[in-house]
Image (cartoon, rainbow, N blue to C red; front, side, top):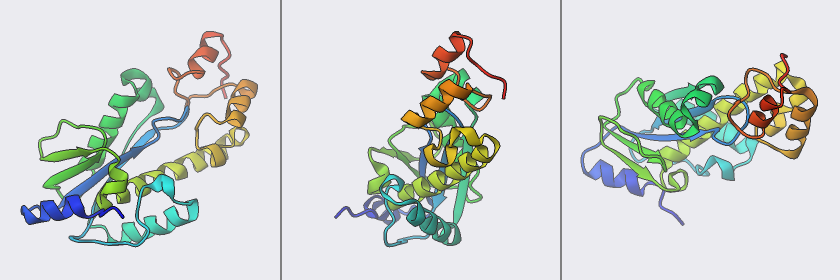
Length: 208
């Protein structure tokens, strides 16, 4: 069993009180924003089942998300649009979303734990590979980020029902790619991502 409070406990011993866990979601989809979340949990917080959002069912994620929102000391959200992703690339967009999420916190963190990505911050931070499994703060951020972005994609699905975003969340599933070939793309797609860029170069973009 992984002690997902290990990093937090070490920091508490050093005198840090407000530790923000940061994670992002949405690097792989062809459509929609990349979204990050920052979460500051109470000291020595524990919540059964809290782990990497990708390992949880939709129902469990939503249940945990509601508990985290109720218990967290502060939650910040940052998102970067598809248009900006196309301008600055997905890695830089992910970093920007994370920084926006940290800035959105209503408590200034004195330490930041980040999933995988290294950020240039003016506060102490640590990048942890597979941090969404190893740090409870990052796990909490991953769940809130995933649920929040899924809600955005569900809303987009109401506007564009032919793309089935409620199920694919913008990821390049076989059915999603078939729907793109059939209906073209709209303004919420990432035009620099393949195969979207190939379609646009062929002149297959539709104004929906």
